[in-house]
Image 1 (cartoon, rainbow, N blue to C red):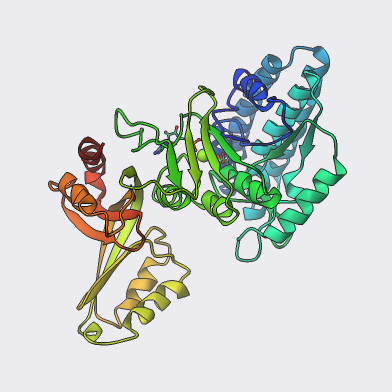
Image 2: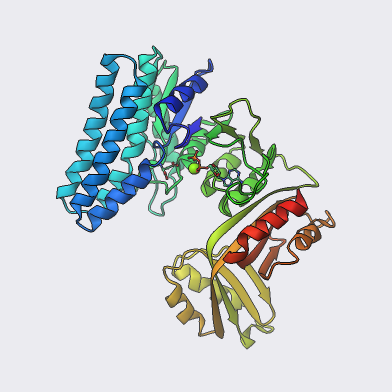
Length: 433
Ligand code: ADP
Ligand code: ASP
Ligand code: MG
């Protein structure tokens, strides 16, 4: 059971989470940092990079005051209030110790890890105050990424099981989302929003019956509720549909979180902490037929078009183009080809200038910034005649830069100008649902 930042965002919310995890079963509970904390830790780190210790101390002190208030509200006995205060004092003293030292990415990652260490420590103490046999499993002892920043699944399985073996007989196991160690043993993390990934890696390592992602909304909605009114939860998604939506911008799920569940065929349930009885969304291997499931949008996309006479009747051209992106470790999201050119999109523009220089060897290169990918997930098998045209009809007023269809049977992606994003999402919802 994984609970996100809003779900553990106050003393009152933590108390409701306790009610949810105490369902009579032995549960492993993954927590994010309390909402806003990781952003504050990023802010502190940014000040420390600039050697602005006054700026950093200001944010640290405000955060510490906030936590002192949470501690007071969370516990009912003086004994546990004191335990809670000691816990946060220890972490804040540690954070403050970095204001006098040199500051590098290594120190930054240690600071970023404090949010989850604090929230899990507080929650574990709260369960203990309620008389529950609760145990803290330190993620830094079992969660690890390798030299390519990929999870080291064999290590995770072995060491998580060793931790559970060492701590037998508890009712609830509480652990940190997001944080891990890297191949060099340093403190690292699974990227922003990565607590979802922690939950699915743990579910996969233990071959859990189900992975539950508890958040602040009643499941995956059929469009982005931040931009479109009247969106509705989708009862069921296949692993592939969910992965597509998460990758293309549905913030409710971290993009990488679906794969470990899919590989081990473990259902993932998206549930609402504020409305625990709501059905939510079940993500499994079952693919619903004859329906368009949901729409998502991914921002900050750059499109690159390479036009070349040399592509005509040639083989090996695309390989040469892709090798350039590979050499700069830049993933490509969408592609579309014609006989005289190829368009691709990327979201990481760190090496854009070098990539464009290298591509110019093959022909003329055009770059369009501020693009947006709209992803429509559903049953788009070619035999499902008419579904692609429903999508096209819904966006007939919108200038379209690229279309990708047929890469899989459950997705259409469309590239548009970022400024057209909201009206495109709204128009798709109005016509498709
Ligand atoms: P948590 O802190 O629990 O991980 P997030 O903020 O990361 O929660 O994700 C939940 C949020 O995702 C929702 O509050 C909602 O605004 C946003 N969201 C974006 N797209 C969708 C979607 N298709 N369905 C549901 N929520 C979405
Ligand atoms: N606390 C981390 C973040 O805010 C991880 C997470 O919440 O999933 O990004
Ligand atoms: Mg999240």
